[in-house]
Amino acid sequence: MVWLKRNVFIVISGVVAVALLAGAVMFAQGAKKKQEDAVASLSTYTNQVKSLMSARPFPNSGTIDKVKSETEVIQTFAKNAEALFEYKPPVRMNGQEFKIHLLKSLLDLQKEATNNNVQIPNQYQFTFGHLVPMPNLPPYGIEDLQERLDDVQHICKILYESKVHALERLERVPAYVKEPGRGTLTYTYWPRTNLTTSDAVFRSIPYVFSFRGFTSELTQVLNRLASSDRFYVVRKVELAQTSGRRRAVAGMGMMDDGEGEDGGGEAPAPVAAPGQNLTLQQRMRLMQQRAQQQAAMKNAGAAPSLRTVVDERPLRVTIVVDIVKLIRNKKEDGPGGPGMPGGPGMAGP
Image 1: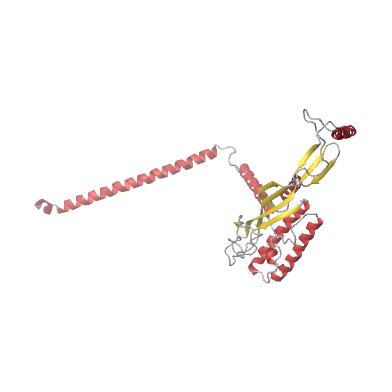
Image 2: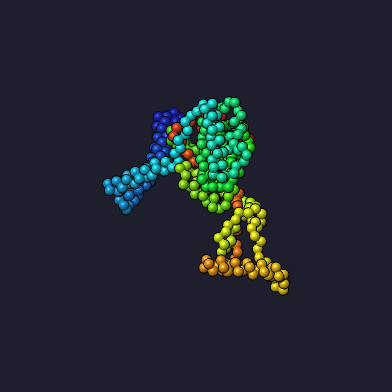
């Protein structure tokens, strides 16, 4: 203790020196860590520069100009691709104007079905029958109802031009929240709205329709959907056979549309089974049928063939499609939620 009292200055100086030494060691370690990080980062950038220097093609003025030109090509392609999806919304109407337009459009669709020999249910209203007796329509739902009606008219036009036998069912999603008419509205498929830019949105609206026809009519419908000025995405095609049948008879140039399993027409000639004796009337009929077939083949110069070469049943076809649209003017949020005037575009059950 006496020594410490006499040499207190030396002791304090030693403690301060030890503290400074510890601080210097810690600072050196931190600086070393930063140096190692800087060296690693420099090495990374050095390798990138070396890879660019050895790249083929070398990023000189020529290759840069080529990249710019290819970028312009991509931008032009994107602009042209947008034209495939672009949709011009119909002119806005008030409730009374839309009611008149709706009634006229429904009458036109019914008349066009008659003119094209397409069967439709009696007094069919094309998913809008529940709106006809309503005295007032929600103002925020008018614009989307116009869009749904325009889509339904376009789908019906494709079916009419394809000469389908009958339109049996047509369903759409609600145009606004709590829209009535559950019998003709589908809640299975949801529309989707994706923001693309500040003033444009992509919208995908599903529709379901069923019709009767043969494979030729189905082919026509799919071809017209593919070549339409609107962008249709076929999500599902379901086929079911009906009771009718279309048959083609070889050598006679005949086609008949019949009901039932055999499709009508003359009964086939009897064929003798091994060990079976035909009656005189059956033999005469068989000989007459063979003579007619031989005469027909001789006149046509055709090789012998079976009686029925085409035997096709009409189909009941159900198709689910999405109509994808690029709408330039973004709609404001309505009382039902963001993205649509009347809500999110889909009503819950």
